[in-house]
Length: 459
Image (tube, rainbow, N blue to C red; front, top):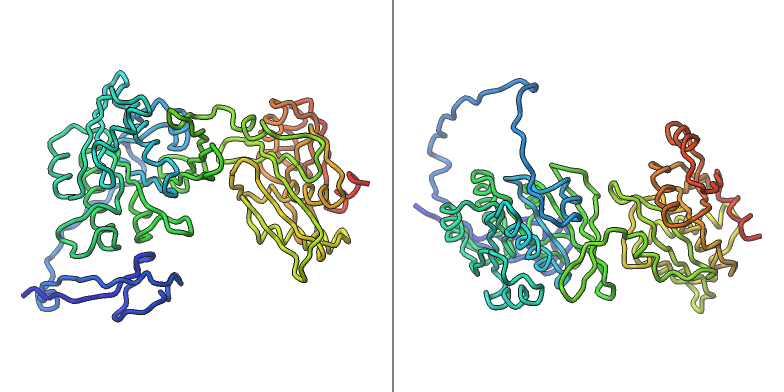
């Protein structure tokens, strides 16, 4: 006998409760718990379990199947995915509404379908009608691409259709709009997202086509739905960018077939997203020299060196508690840097507001930006600009020491390519020191072991 029961499930993290409550105890979100109906046959407790079959084990060493990656023709996409798309892989793409996810995937689909191999590509939209997708394709100049387009939300119909095709790439836009009859809950709920993704992933693995799943994000920037969705897929890509900027960053946070933290840089134009071959030059294009509070940071994103401008503004505060505002960096790390400068360099920020901005809308996460942030803050406080042809990088510890960072020579090489002639860097040890002695990038390097020495640049 089939029995129906109700559970209250958080739509943000998937936690289940027996009764409704306003706040989820697991993720801390408010008003995300929704009533869902579950179905059971009532016999699971009394029917004996079926005996399973014995699985076969093989040694770790052996022959493995090699996959020929599909080249999309967009170098930034191929870079982020590890050199191309692996047949049978599942890629989850998340990003803010209107950031350009559908535009990017339509360009990928059109590019693959027009290559010499003539890959069969299927674009299935659950959010837009066919005419709406065609309007976007006309605007992007892709109307003549042999892309198979459909508007559907029933996963059973999609699976039945794809079973009879030789699809190489399938795009589902988006997974939150799909529904499965067996899961008795509304589309977009935790149960529906998990069930629909499982069926589509199982088909992709069996048929060997590349599956793109577009995912909505929460207000915190995480992909909505159960966290298990990110564990089920092979690659998770986040499409980032500020609405006020033309730049878009495609970042890999998980990749079973390539490196993580790899980024691809695009520029939003009238004809769609255009890849940026030299993002460092683009991020520094509007930089003005001889301005206090400005410092160029030589960073690493994945395997790519990237030069960005860090801007700081220190101004007298009119409040009892000074303000700290950060865009593109960790606000807690800024508080730590200010505390170190006060304790180790006898500087006073208690009566000043501090504003920090990463120019161009880029988000930086590596600790190597500590030294550049400190230089920008001191420059703004003293109103003395740094040399316009200088780059800075290094990690700062709580005792004020400047710690070494990885890939020093790659950062210096990128700086030399863009015309920088000097650099403030942490002490170099080991392999980096040996390579630095063998390579000359015509950059004068000043090694700093403690933040106290930063004051000498402004005296």
